[in-house]
Image (cartoon, rainbow, N blue to C red; front, side):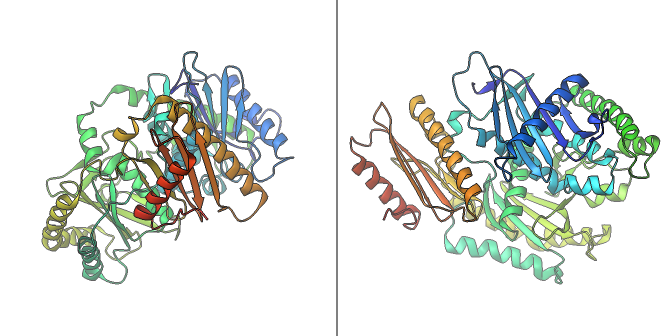
Amino acid sequence: MGAWAESVQVCVFDMRRGQQEGHELDKILFFSPLDCPLPTQLSVVGLSEGLITFTRIFSPEKPCQLMQAELHCHIFFNCEPDIWIVMVIEKSKEGEEEVRVAAIEGMLKEAHDLFVMFFGSIRGMLEKHPVGDLARSCLHAFFPDYLAEFMVGKKLRLPSIREGLTERGMVEPVNLDRDTFLHAQSLVGLLESWFGGGTVRHTMLLFHNYLVSSTLSAEDTARLFGYALLRLTPAAISLSNRRIKSASMSAISAAGQSKIRNLLNNGSAASSQGPSSGEEGLERVTKKHPRPLKPDGWWKEVDNFLATDAWESDSREAKALGPTIWLQHSNEQMRLCVFQYRTTTLIILVPTNSSVNGLDGLSLLRGHLLEKGAQKMQKLEERLAKEWKGINASHIAGYRYLCCDRTGKTAKASPPSKVATLSKESLAVLNLVRADIDLEKGRLERQASHHDADLEVCVRTKQNAWLVVRARGGQELYTVQERAGDTLLLASDAVEKLSKRHFNGHFYSD
């Protein structure tokens, strides 16, 4: 399998639905490509459900992860109870790279995390609207835009071995001195003091594509940070401004609506649950839903606040109030307000039930920020720009590395330009080692409640490169050393020095 897949199918289905014969189509909540014939869709879902049911006998907690066939590869992700996302990849005839399953799972998990942040859980939607029309319409409003980030024509850009020293779903903090960090925290404190009473509930500060500070939980920080990189940072805004809106997105949307109608007609006939008739369901489906990943959906206004038309609504007031997101940690709905000065982005979250949530209240908040906070943002930007060491700030001479903190959802890694200097053989071996470690971690998770077992792996390649991996208490360090010497002792000593100088000695060997 290479870094590109010739074609790909993505399916979201609910195993609790469509239990009666002839009603199997009711299981399908989303399927891509949208014009895929129904027999093919049913075949994919049927095979997937059979594999999941069979493997549950041997592993109830993690029944199925991967199925390799001669021409296709099936990746399974159990996103919610009995709700599965399955990706079917046609293997490339020319490719030589083996893609880590966990890397593709990371894509599917990121998609689900973002969906839940904007729409809430799929299971919750199905319980409130048993016919499934709301869940289907929201999935069709979200998934085509997410998949478009990885598609070129009909080909899917898979995680390459050159991304072996990266990890999806992680936040990369920017290194700051104490005075600059306190300066950033004082801005956050001022925002809270201006309104009081928890009106400004949370804030997040970003500089370029790095995190400066966040008052959110680790999970919510990682989700919102991931979305910011896709749509809210200056780089993302600039990219959107250069894109040309094409009629293809409208065609996808129209095809999606047609597909939803077919699904609803079958679903309404198959289900006796819920009050929705076919017409009521269609009316809800044809009502516009947010497209948070809509291309060109965000832009910067003259007052440096970001605006969006991705939250389409019939209400002018709803458009003016801006988008909302759900926080996983507190299960609260928050309104998103984004202010950007040059390369610094300030994200403010206001509870939707707050007294400042109306148009007048949000105008007051924006006015205060422009009047009192803009100058402080400017000074913070100047301090950050002066202290920042550029895109290679995370480079450590002599090392190619990735350090992940699974608990804090943070990562520090060598910049891509430095990783690109590694040989293809070193990257391929790293990919295989990480795949073995993924399997070992999965085995430990199934066998014990304690998932943070210590681990150390040392591998020497044919070209005398050393791969040293150490895991300690929920943190993992992956290093690749080329021309590091002929002995394990020298390679291990280099990792000891790296741990002592840059990671507080956390990865010392016993």
